[in-house]
Length: 555
Image (tube, rainbow, N blue to C red; front, side, top):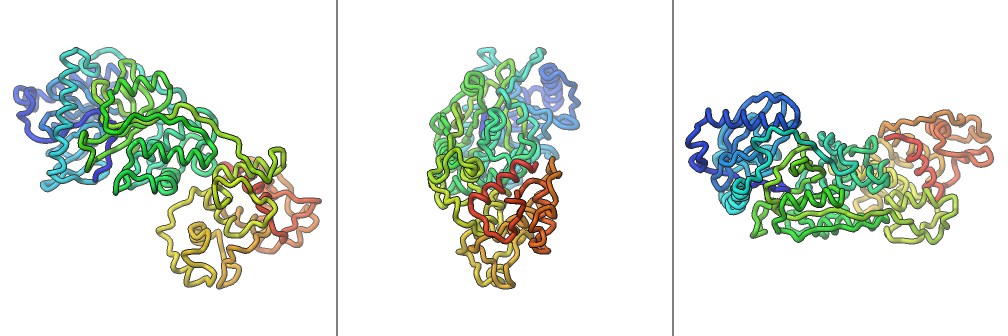
C-alpha cells in the first residue's frame, strides 16, 4: 500500500465542485481572488513578496474543495475552500501538483494525488491506490474537514486573513533541519522507510545537539550535520527493522519504531527514554506543539488515512521540529525539497507520535581490556559502532592479542563505509573465481563490496584468504585504498617518511605508496624505529589503526 504521509494534519481528497459553496458562487475567477488575498496573508506572515504562478482546484476523498496556489520560482499554499483556512504552505518547495492541471486530489499533508482514469497516483512518489481504496479514506477526510468548520465557528483559524508577521521557533539545535533539502542530506532511501528517515533525522539532531555520537559521524555523516547518503536509514531498516514489522509490507507504527530505536541504542551502548502515544489515536496539533515547547525535542509523527479501521492503511511519518508564534507546526516530510513545511494548528494529527526525552552514551565494558589500557579508547570505539566484529554485540571480551583476520579488517572498512548495498555487484563471479569464497563465507558482503571497489585482491588467482592473519603492510594498503576511494582529506600530512625507519627496505614494492602515506599521516607508528611490515597485527593494534583514521581523516 501507499506509504506516504505522517502528519496527516489534513486529510481529504475527491469529487465534485458542487461540494463547495465558494466554488459554486465565485467560479474560477473568485478562486483566484481568494488565493490572491490568502497569499497576501502568507506574505505578511513570512515577510516576503510572492509571485503567483497558478491557482488550481483540489478535492478530498469526501468531496470537499481546496484551493492550491503555486508561486514562482518555488512555493505553494493549500487552503480550505469554504473556511479559507490555509492548511499548509511551503515557500522553498515545489508544488506537489506542479505540471498537473485536472483531477487533482488532496488527502491532507503528504497525501497528494491525481486521477489517471483508473487509479489515484501519488504526485511525488508515484505509488498508487485504487478507486475502492480511495473511497475508504472519505470518512477520515470528512472528520478532518469538520475540524476546520469547528475552528472557524470558534474563530480560531490562524493562518487565514492575518496581516501579522509571525516568527518560527525551532527546537534548540534543530534549525539546520530546514536546510536538509537534498535526498542525501537527510538520509533518503527509497522503499517505504519514512519512519526510519524521520528517526534518523531525530538521531542526527541528538548527535549535533549534545555533541555525542548517537550516529557515528565518521561513518554516516558529512560536515557533522547532514548524512552522506541513505546508508544510515538502510542500516536502521535492515539491521534493526526485521523482526519488528507490524505489517506484511514492513510498515512501522510508532511502537515498533520504538523497538528499532531501543535495539539500536543497545548496540551503541546508549540509554534512551522513548515516549509514544498509542497508534491510531487522534492527537491534535496542540499536543505536538506542547511537546516541542516543553520537552524541547523534535517529534516523529505517524499518520494513517484509514483511521479508525487500521487495516490496509497508508501511513507516513514526518519529523516535527518547530512551531510558529501562532502555534502552527513546522515539519520535514522526508522528501527532497520538503524540509520546511508549515501545517495549520487547527488540524487534528491522525496517528501516533514518538520522541526521546533522555539519552546518554554509556561506558563500554571490556573485561579483557582495563579502562586505563592504551587500547581501551580505540577498542571501545570499534565495539560501540560495530567496526570490529565481536560475534555478539553484547560480548564483554575483545580478545585484543589474537590476530586480526583479513576478512575482519575488510569488514571494518565496510562498516566505516556505512555497509553499502551490494545487490548491484555480481557475487557469482567471485564464487567462480575464488575457491575459498561462496555465499556462506563469513564477511561475505564486505568482501563483495571491497572486491568491486578495488580494495580487495586475491592472495593468489584463486584464493582470497579472508581467514588468514593480516600483516601490518596489508592493513596499511587496505586503508590507503579505502581512504582514496572515499576521498578523505587530512589536515596533517607532515609525519615522517617511511624511508626514515630502519627497516624501510623490507616494505614490499606494492606497499610503498601506502606505507609512506600512512607514516606521513600518523596512521601507523613504528616501534623502536621499525615498521615491521610483515608482522601480523593483533585485534587491538588494528583497532588503534582504524581509530587513528577516524581521528585524522575528514570524510
